[in-house]
Image (cartoon, rainbow, N blue to C red; front, side):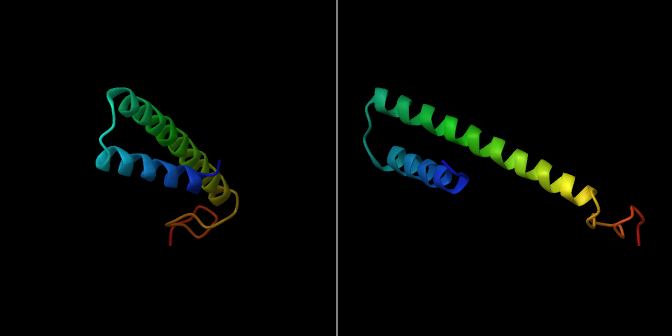
Length: 72
């Protein structure tokens, strides 16, 4: 499942937990699924951030530099 689908599913879980009268077991299962989705999304974001940082340091402009590591 891609990042966007995970976010949508996580939002649906939150809405369900806020609006429906779930049993304890249903609440725990929804919470567990939400935590798992949240963790997966955070890992995906961390990997994307690392990839962007790598690309930026391999010849692309890095904020505050001229692309050669010189400020200005």
